[in-house]
Length: 194
Image (cartoon, rainbow, N blue to C red; front, top):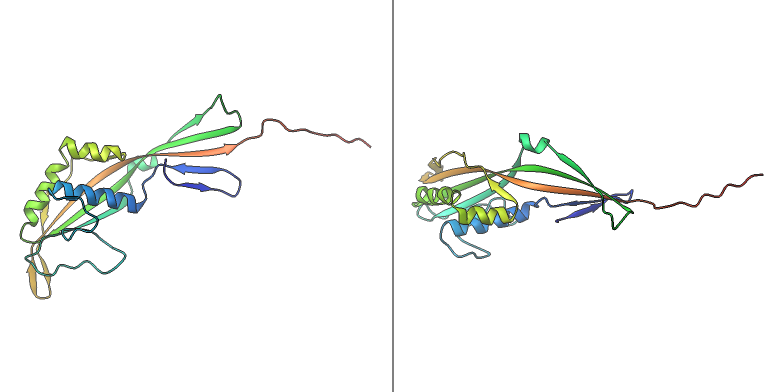
């Protein structure tokens, strides 16, 4: 499982939910692969929006660039939670309950440059290919297959039009959160009578 939190009462919450940095990295690497590029740490073509340093920048309309933004979004499945009590016959002192639910992510690709339409098409097509959906499934991520086609929206930047195409997709993340509470097996009680 992923990160854990320990509460003041001693309970521990362990969650498989991806942190924002983890899904950003997964989608970044996947996008490079979908565009037929090698996976590198710092690509000039694919960038994560809202980076720690600097603002998104496109030097000229002739440069292909893709910005990727991953955001959680409210959905019906996030509100439905299966709660399962776990009994471990080997450890009577552990009380565990699991909550299982689906979290929704809105993934937004913003393509700039002369090949923006073709790059958006390539990413959308790849989302229907088993090779890429298997990579997502390995991280408990599952894309919705009914999503809109890329939309061309030329953008005026500094008095010059930049070719731009946007693509959006909803990706579902299967999450398991375990609440572990250590219990007491026995207590010695002394009764004093006066």
